[in-house]
Image 1 (spheres, one colour):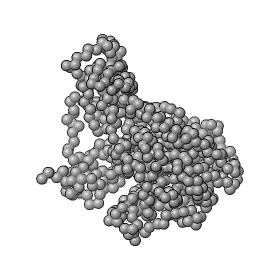
Image 2: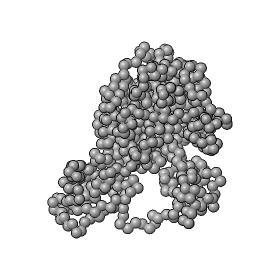
Image 3: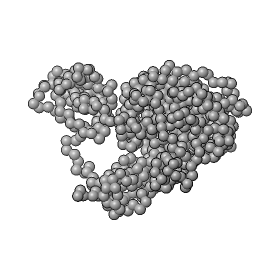
Length: 638
């Protein structure tokens, strides 16, 4: 099979994956074309391309999911190929056909292969016929206590959407309804199936690459067991601790899966591996995976370049290069793990990740993280001769990063990489179920960091010449200065003198750098304010903190009625609890509303037991951050 050489490439995606594909395209001498929604008009992927075409609107359904507009954009810009990235239309067989029917080269597998794997239930039938090991399905209508726990999954799903774990038969009907509703909303298909839920299983996958000449590569294994809400957080290659016989079995099954659908291009076959080492097929992703950089690092390959060459008809060598070393990737999200993984929006003032690591990102300092898309800021990848070295390098780079403007999962990532279970390779999908509380505890140096913030605020500035030197301050112990800050829901009151404090010596204090000797150990604290001085960022080797100064006289208008449920982020109300009306009795922790934002569904819970006195939210309603959704009047104490 030979096709015309590609000269100009449109990427039907956004963010870091579009930037990453453009990087390879430039290296290959290809012209690049971006598409963008209105909120993305000045996004990094647009700035990185040679040309860009607007997709009018903001919501994905009006922009990045409009295949007709994307094909029109490619033709108008003179592109001769379309790369779908991941997400959006990357696994849409109809879009792949439309691209080809328009005379454009599709950088992906044949539409028939996408279609064959699009439904997890149909895909499992194909895999069973190909001899790939599978979990036996469970009929929810006939489920018994012996079948528990069950995992409900959307047949057309991905990314953790439409998934529920059921441990009680009494909860099965409601879970089926919720999973089906979420699947229908996310994928336009409410089909849900059930299978046994494997406790403490590992998520292991095999990267494949196939050409049109019969060659299929199995590019090692990846472990993606550390997940939140069934979405991956930390990935690595090769998967640690697997016996050689199991690796070979996984490679063989992945190649069989690819051959069963006449696959071409890059794809991933995902498996669940039980604690006793039995593998079971989960699904096949007919696209490039988010975590592909760890495989690239270990094999010394550029998978995007190989995708392009395969699409042009080139043949792969008979076997891939030999892998070397170990690679680990962490997904840096704008989210708060301590608050039910709540996504964050706003201006990203600083994104600076040091060290010898690979950083794939769709943002730079000053960019805005909006509400319409996934909150991933970057993928950070370390590669080293051994797993221990790679893990250590990645943790060190993230610990030293300066990320200002948004709450992120950075501290969680560092804590995860340094956790004894992780460093020992004891991995399974229940990692965060067991360790999240410990990993999200407030950093012990918050009080000292608050002191550094206060000292920096009081430090001399060019317009304060009378206090040009720290030594010019007077140390009046009877009249300390006071500052109050909040961070991560905790308020700190700092009473400080410019020179010394119990257990702390002030060695230097400038507007952007404070040096303290704490219990005999010298520490440097880097301090930065955002442009409107509403937040102060303090970074040190011990951790990073964002402090919000507390006004001396709070605005009375900031108060809200007790029991008010406010929208924690902009989003869409996708469900209201059945039968919920004003006057309904509710119990503490009961889900009342479901809000969808940034590709995730968030439950709004009753803050206390009592009576719902007001309900302002309806299904389908768009709400802004802080909007009043409902009010619960707490039951008086008896």
